[in-house]
Every structure is written in structure tokens, then in C-alpha cells.
Length: 176
Image (cartoon, rainbow, N blue to C red):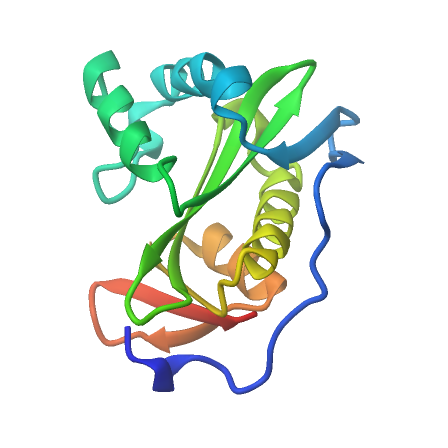
């Protein structure tokens, strides 16, 4: 994405993890940095349980081997990751994957179906952006399917603005 499609003013402030909030269902949700040793198996289990109908743009992939390979690529060195947990079960994950130009990243977020619509996505993204800013990320972009109004509303609430609405995918951007 070209740098002229990012807002001039930085968004925020964003929290530093860990943060614990009560979601709209009254559940205590903790959002914290992803830890490979502590979270990898639980994250694989979350993606294995992910409803195929909620997959967008081919992600998350299906099948244990494909999930493991995909997680290797989005949790490796240089990426920024946070997880949302409920009673130590991973119920959400958000990642910033480095992109060009330098200090730019693409955002992806996933929340298990039973936890969607409860405010967890907002806390995941805000905490992720706080960690990203601390890691030196200055610009973040994402793409979302045009029909996905709940996701677009969530991104706008956090501070993302439309940057390319001409394609099939709706691109949005934020400056940290």
C-alpha cells in the first residue's frame, strides 16, 4: 500500500498488555502478548476449531499441517502478536505482519465464533496496535471483504480509515 493512503495524524492512545476486560457477555478476557512456548498449542487448537464459514480470503487455513505452517509464518521473528484468553483458553488472535515500506505492517484478526460480537475484537486490535507502536510500527493496513460491515465498523471504531474502496476488497489504514 502506498504511504499517501495513510492518515496524516496518528491514532491512539493504545494500551500496553496485558489488559483484562469484561466482555459484553460478562466474561473476563485477558489480552496479552503471544508467547510461543505458552500459547502455540492453544492457538493451533483455536484455529482448528474455527468455523469454516467464518474464514475470509482463505485464512485461517484448515487442517493441522496447514495451520501449523501458517502460524510459523505469522508468528516468526519480526511479527507482532497478541492473544485473547478466557480461563487460559485462547479465544482470539491478532497479528501485525511486516510489509513494505519499512515500519509498515498488515493486520489480521481472528476471534472464535462463540466470542464474536462481545467487544473482544476491539480490545485485541487496540492492544495489538499499542504493542506494534512500541515495536516501531508506524503504519498499519488491512483488507476486509466489502460486505463485512461488522468488521468495517470495528476497524473504524479503532481509528482505521478507508484507503482503497475501488477493489473487491475494502482496504483500510491507520497511522501509529
